[in-house]
Amino acid sequence: MIRLWLFLLCSVLLIPLEARERPNIIVIMADDLGYGDLSADRKGAPRTPSAQRMADEGMLFTDAHSPSAVCTPTRYSLLTGRYAWRSYLQDWVLSERMPLLIEEGIETLPAMMQTGGYVTGCVGKWHLGFGREKDAY
Image (cartoon, rainbow, N blue to C red; front, side, top):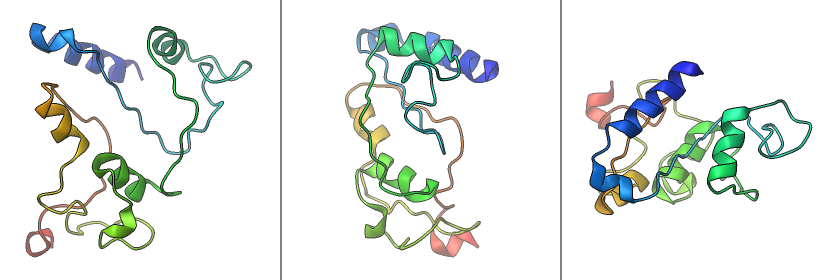
């Protein structure tokens, strides 16, 4: 966990000064993390000082809904703003070496942020396919 925070800190320090005029936006998508699992959400939960500090100094959203019970369609929906069942994935998650789930030409959240002058990055699991269908196998 300390490595993740150090990476995020270094990433923020490397952002050009003109980009720092915009508020930083950090999206944390965690499997099986529910409302009340962090001390920022609920009194009596395990202490999470870093999450508590981010909540105290920023915005805390307390009403969220997931488009799916599993990670792949949820991640797809977060990045594209579309329900995953509008893609070729009609149930469950992608298996290894499947083609990209996000169709070429679909605007994603990071692309929209970049047009607004933000520098974007992703740390963690992708699990949204690898390349075009002919290249994926």
